[in-house]
Length: 196
Image 1: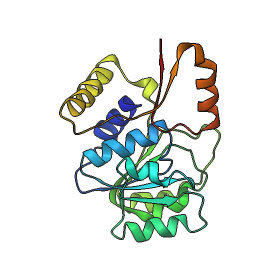
Image 2: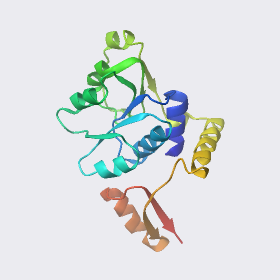
Image 3: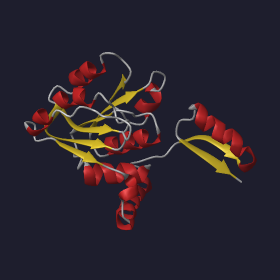
């Protein structure tokens, strides 16, 4: 997940300090990695999360957490980013993509890493007048060199304490089935470790 965050934010999104990023699905493994790394990189992080996940996502470094299922979600994002969103990280493949485009800043980058089943309407006229880019991103396409560079960036941040991991639950190997059930139930925040 950290590799996805590193390659996605550094290379694909070219996130810069002071920019505003919206992470649409921020409470999952990839989403929390994006939130953590974006915060460490000096971005203002607006995170979309389900009710009940707000404290976890906030603890990961989000400046503002919005209920992603709220009927006024996009209005809340607009209020949170009055000059526009610089990077919009879409990890859900939302069919409401067109609602995000008017909220983009000039030169914005939209990173799409999901949505194989969705067919959103793409308002091209609003993208080109904003000089905005929509970039597809799949970590499975990363080269060995990309992954090595991502590991280097993450390891440096971990070594200096700028980035911290969080263990949400620990299970013994004999409890592997219980660990799997805990993941499926969705109540584990952070890394789940299985130890001998």
